[in-house]
Structure formats: structure tokens, C-alpha cells
Image 1 (spheres, helix red, strand yellow):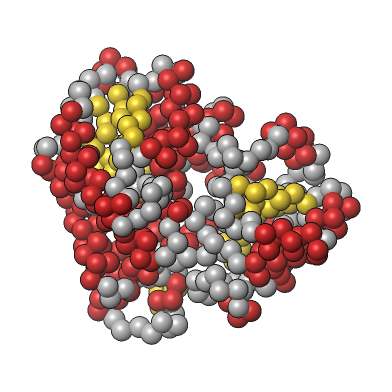
Image 2 (cartoon, helix red, strand yellow; image 1 turned 60 degrees about the vertical axis):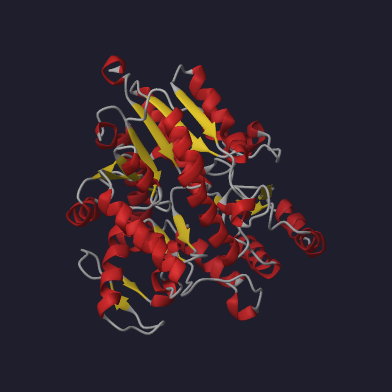
Length: 455
């Protein structure tokens, strides 16, 4: 197979966000295993984070190169080093960040394409950076869109946009998503802000994203056919050529592949971690992690900690470095939470990290807690379509004010976890069974001969 594809050169251009860079790096390795040459565009700071992944690939004799390009922070009005979505602190900084992405593509990326040998056979780019389309058209290179969301999210988002163009709905008025096989309700308060924003810059960005999707050779989804066949069919009817090629998370076979992209700024003894997990009863550990983008107030961190404690389940609690303030450390020391949970079967373990460690192989069931609007799509998909999760009960985006009315209370956290871990009821047993079925389907799709492998 290598000789058949060895002349192909794929150029991958992700949005500078770990939620895009990580799966696209996995995709690069899958392509390289087919014998093609892959170039992955990044920036200097992001290249440092993923250097281990590329080094690991080269040890396997895979033809992958990571090309760091200077991110135009100053030109866009950003501070130096603001090269990733994680570093953004406001809507204004987000606006400048996307302007920097546009400048990067229209200048340095164009120059890179002219110099690359061999010439790229195609460009695969994140949907959030539509300016790549113009560059691809300029050099007459086929362009594919890389989606990090599910087919459910992509189709629901499209159908809701069309619905809201013709229907007046108040912010808190529930409405059904049209033209999908499941009964799914949303309110406008739960939708991505860009969908209802009046800002002209945001509107222009959305129009360019839609145009890029319409003009692309096809769409690549980090999902698999067996997971959501109804929504894949719907996407194909709307968007044309759509291929499910995931889930990339199961393609990392070795422990080194799962940890190479983690932030080395924190210290975790992997052997101790495994020993601690092995000492717990099967299917008993709660993994509490809110991703790399969410900001937590001290008040909300308190509620989470007290809710985890009240469940009496062993847990691993990940606190982002940005959220682990002096006030948080002081509260943990004065409240005595760690000491209380340590006395109970040594079960409380909090980890301070810049982004979540690669422990997702233990996660089979989910509590859905949308912190920003895109995650309401994930919530509906996990709970209402797949049936492998429970809601914590959030009805709108949770802001970071710390005000009591904006908090998810400790008893909500407790109830959701206890509901999730209730394997004695028929509903709980079916949820667990369904989760195990999804896990098997995920692995099978990625194996040689599976649907994602063939796609």
C-alpha cells in the first residue's frame, strides 16, 4: 500500500486549539501509516507541546513533519505567546486571535505552500479557519474540511440556523430541532453565541465558514458510521461528500502515544496512578475534568469539591493550572477537604494540570455539564441519542461570575453522580450496557477493515 500512495503529500492546517491540533495529529499518523507524506502546520509554542508525538511517529518510520510558522500576535494586537485558544481571556482577544489566524494563512502559509516539495496533493483544514479555502483555490489544490464535532452536531446546527431564519423565538422558549429522527429541544440561550450574534465581524466569519464547507471537496468527521448512521445520512444529504474517519482517540495504541502530547509542567507518577486505580473496585472511580477551555471561579470549585466528597465514590479531580489560584489552595487547606477524603479509603486525588492528562480510557459514562454553548449539542447527543450519560441540570451557559445564582450547587453534582453510578436500577444497567456497546463499536470501526479504517 505504501508504494501506491507514496507520492501523495497531505498538508494539514488545524485551528490553533488543542481540541483541533490533537485529533488532526492523530489523523496525520493514520495517513502516514498508509504510506503518504504528511506536513502539519503549527506555531512555535504548539510545536513544543506536540514534539513528542512527531518524534514517536518518526521512530515508527512514518513520514510526518511538523512545520512551525510564526504566529502574527503583534500584527493582530495580541500579546506575544498567545498562540492557542486556551490563552484567550475575552471576546475581544478571541476576535484578534482569529484575525491572526487569517493573517497567518494569507501570508506565511501561502509562502510555505510555494516552497514545499513535493507540492501538496490536498489541504485539510479546520472548519473554523475558512481562509484556507482561498489559498487552496489560488494554488489549485483540493481542500477538505476537518470537523471535530459529531454528525449530530453538524446537522442540528445547520437545521437550527435554517429554522431561526424563518421563526421568531424568545431566548428561553424551547423549540424542537427540525428534520432529525430524535425529539431534541433547545432554547436560544443554549445555542452557540455566533449563531445569534448581531456583530458584523462574527456574521462575516460565519458566512465564510459556510462558503468554505460548500466549496470544499468533502468533509472529514472525527466520528464513525455505526455511532450515528441517521445523522451521517442527514449530513450527506445536506453537505454532499462526508466521511467518518474516527474516533482517533482509540488509535493511540501505546501509552507513550497517549502521553506524548500532555503538558510536562506537572508531575504524575504513572505507576502510582495505575496502582491506585487498580486498588479500586471495578467501575467505581469518578473522573472529574472540564476540559482545557473552561474557566472556574473559586465558588464553583468549592461546589464541585463538596459534591464529589458527598458521593462517597473514589475520584480523580483535574483542576486546570489557570484555575488553581492561591485562593483555591487556601480553601482546600482551611476547609480540610483533602484530609477528609484521604481518611476515607484514600480516595481524594486532585491533579493540577495545564490540560487534562490522557486518562480518558477509564471514562465510559458521562455526566454532561455544558460550560459553553457548543457543549449543549454534546449533552443532547450523549444523553438523548446515545443514552450513555445523565444531565447535571444546567439550562444555560454557566458564566464565571461566582455569584450564587450562576453556580451549579454541590447537591446537583452529588445527585448527578449518584444517578450515573446507579447500576442497580434497570435504567442504570441499560446505560452501562449501552456504554460498553459504544466502546466496542468505537474500537471495531478503527481496526483494519472497519468503517473508519476503510474511509
